[in-house]
Image (cartoon, rainbow, N blue to C red; front, side, top):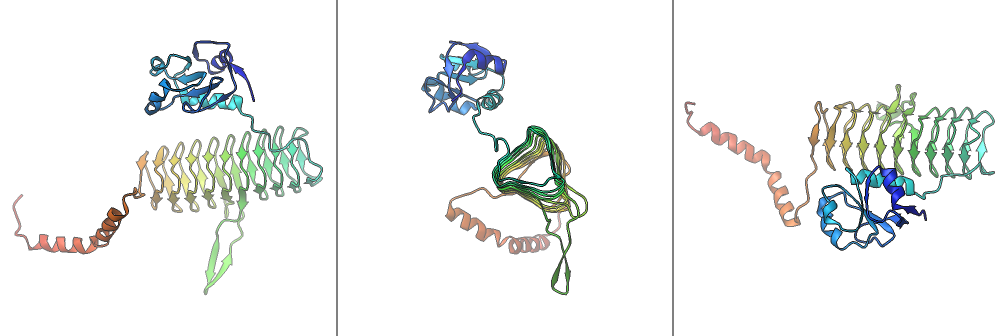
Amino acid sequence: MKLMKLQQIAEILNAELVGDDSLSISRIATLENATGNEIGFLANKKYRSKLASTQAGAVILSPQDADYFTGNKIIVANPYLAYALLAQVMDTTPEPATNVHPSAIIDPTAKLDKSVSVGANVVIEEGVEIAAGSSIGAGSFIGKGAKIGTNTKIWANVTIYHQVEIGNSCLVHANTVIGADGFGYANEKGQWVKIPQLGTVVIGDNVEVGASTTIDRGAIEDTIIERNVIIDNQVQIAHNVVVKEGTAIAGCTVIAGSTTIGKYCQIGGLSGIAGHIEIADGVVLTGMSMVISGIDKPGVYSSGVPHSENKDWRRNMAQLRQLSAINKRLKAVEKSLPERDE
């Protein structure tokens, strides 16, 4: 438990404090469940009504919401950002590893800064380079010639194939695989002939990769994830994909090979993106979008069908199957009508 005075919190957040600056705060909690030594936050006005009943010792809120709460308050322009920054300060998550565990197998040619930590049963192959402050979680595998930058955290059971490059201050969650072969085959009379994947994966600085995500190495050129990209759990990124700076990709999304995703895009969960296309900067895809052709301008795009009651859905699907026949009948009716002057 990490205790902080309200005054400290206000200084960290560069915020206005109204109330008892000496109050000790033990953790962040929701408005609904917070107690007297916990701090809540209001980032969505639809929860404003909870201010009247919350037992939180203090609340982070915006100037627009400040008058709705009479207790101790931290007033900031962006409460959600303030919550994120405070959560970083109060975070008690342990490091993936501390020191170098005696069971780790490290090739003599690998170059590890003396400050690198390596967990139990890690395998680090020849020619690997790991820079200062990085840590490798238990059971992970780092393949030949891979490079990992400074202050990067690799959690347990991550597999990083040969020649993969990962930048500074990255975070890779458990069971992720980076640099496995892309899905490349030629067909000869019904027999699949494997195409060796000769590229690698290059990941920029400040990238987070969620648990059980897979990023395939390039077939000839590299698969590239630029800086400040965030990738959720169970995402599949195929060979030669380029994801540009600042893009966010939610869980279970699949991106097929040789596609380029622009800067600062937001890809909703369960989206499927076809290969060999380009998506412009600033595109937002809502959840379950199916993208089969390129998108050349920013905006919000959707293709998933929202849920409805089953009886309505069945009726709509039955009618949808008849669209082609209805269209033909409509055209026939139009042809039978007398021509009219405009």
